[in-house]
Image (tube, rainbow, N blue to C red):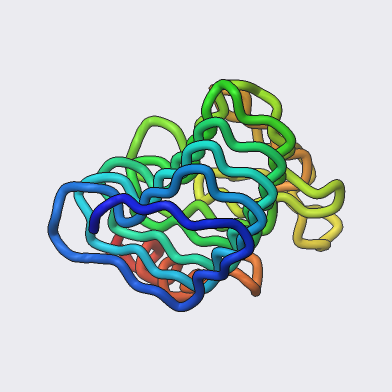
Length: 189
């Protein structure tokens, strides 16, 4: 699929990109005030989504799976919300560039990430929770002694990841979580 650019105030919902080809499932440049939700990007050797100079967008309820080069790369990304997305079997979930700031990442599921890092935040100016809920990380092995569904200790990872409220299970809004976790537990992942 060739890179493309959307003007402001657009919605991309229920789109599917996939197949065995080596490129980005979708590439955006100079996108702002968009709702990018309910999309599936699957079976790509390259990157799932690349977003350059993106601001004030909402990425919600997307499923990015079986992607070789990383789930979603956001470079020069400002004030975006990444909420209730699922990253399954990608080399990296979410990568935010050094100029990224003001982005909020919560209720996402990072399941069976195959690379060295679950996510990458080279600028360190990303909020990895909303002050009450963070994200589900399949490599998080903390405890939840009070049973509220939030880990008792923060999830910390290299490259500026600090989720103060890691979820103990995938969030109910995130797509495809149950099947992905069941497959992983059963050895199918």
